[in-house]
Image 1 (cartoon, rainbow, N blue to C red):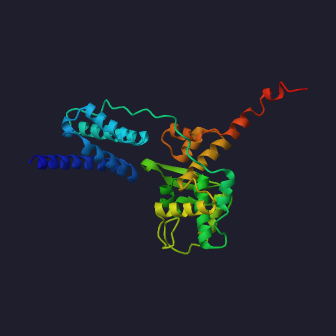
Image 2 (cartoon, rainbow, N blue to C red):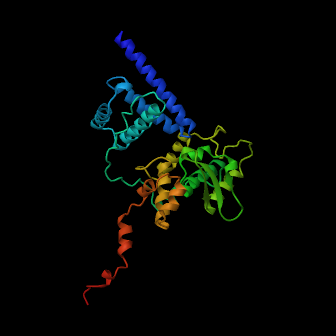
Image 3 (tube, rainbow, N blue to C red):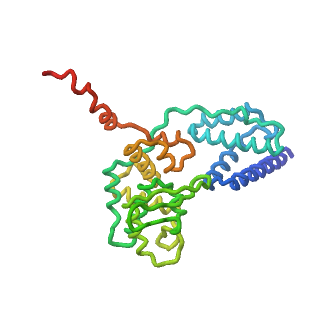
Length: 305
């Protein structure tokens, strides 16, 4: 009997969770974010010692403390805490909870964030030289790699592009219309090398498919399909310690900030909601530090005459 009651209670709480996740989707949250929140909240509901209506802040803290002890990363735990706060606030505001047990919750402290791994300029040149300019597949692959590196697009944004989203004049800069996270619409510039790569690829297209990039089945590329393509070229370029399309986004951000250190502009290009996210790319390596002090007067003082 008690087991059936627990099952009924959990089923009711999961229905509330799905109602909340549906509201998130209507607000424009990405499918990826909704899936992540569903995993986090599902695990939380399964771990609670009693009904959600009777849970105390201490119970929630214990759940997250156990996750920490189990070795879950601080960033993943903080995402779960954010999901819990948002879920409980939703239930409280909808009158489903008399009190909000998650209100006192605070994110756990993070150590210094490591800068994302990126490619050197020489590695990028090697990578972009690999697709054959003499075949339609090679021209398509080069256009994909060029666009990822020269715009910093997320792979999901690249897959969602349609031909109507691209403006490609014969000369000068082109432009992309991109729907980013939270369904935020923004325009990105396309430099001439990337625009020329796109024009060369599109000249091979004689179909009516709206998708900008098609796989060998003449279907819109999936995220997994792009990841496999990028990884194949990274391996061929001898780059085995970094993988995935996101490494090209990291590389774009790093190279853009080195060329012109304007955090606000790069934040807009990357579609980050917060500039603190963009600050991850302001890492300094030894050559950056050497260049910074190369012209100091100290380099001309104290020498042996």
